[in-house]
Length: 307
Ligand SMILES: [Zn+2]
Ligand SMILES: [Zn+2]
Ligand SMILES: [Zn+2]
Ligand SMILES: [Zn+2]
Picture 1 (cartoon, helix red, strand yellow):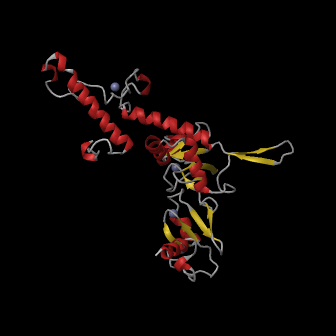
Picture 2: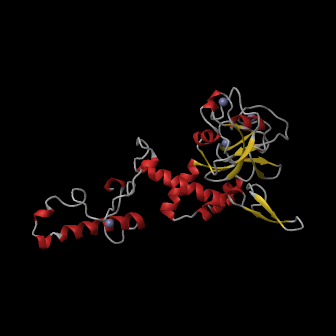
Picture 3: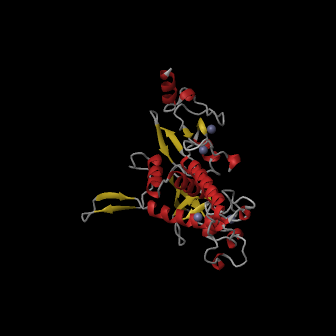
């Protein structure tokens, strides 16, 4: 049986059913035998011709595309295939787009890639500057002046969850992204700058997306904390937040009317500590089970309904 699973796994490294086909399975057009074949990891396992890959991805600039070089699949990007992403309209047509395009390094959950994009220049742009166009597109800019690096909201949210649940730090998260983009990191990971020695010879390729992502993720956590504390619709805006306003009540401390049994004050003073200890013990057990995900200390296992 292992041979079956092995063969089927290796089959994905080849053309599969499209081996002898010269018809694109997407548009059904018949091409020459040497037509350029593409496959997108996010769209599905099927083969696409150049026209199909360009038209399918006008609204999905971050998909991971590979091209068949005649022997094996090679990573490529939509930018290299001539796609330009229109900001401000979610890639729908802008009647008067900005005259120039520019390259934006976008850190998505799985890969870091360069997207050729164009800002909106029509009357919609009078209401949204470049930063607003990026934020409204779900891309969080690393800087506020001429940003050239962004992280998607999805990537920031994924990092936050992995950080809280699995203690993943920025270094490891960005390192995993870089290796997913290009395991050998020789060509396709966008490089910030190249370090050269005095003779001008290349000595190292330095990545500083790590620092940029660290800043963005800390800012994002702060914004999320403010949102959870109900600061979004306060008339005084963020600046009016008072000290302690975003604090979270401690789950294990006894709070009258919240986690203490009714009538606990009615028992004799020398026994009033009992429900307090009991409550603290239960909350500690609850946290142990939730945080460690283990039910070894008691038979009570945390389920969504008991939360
Ligand atoms: Zn096609
Ligand atoms: Zn795709
Ligand atoms: Zn526009
Ligand atoms: Zn406490």
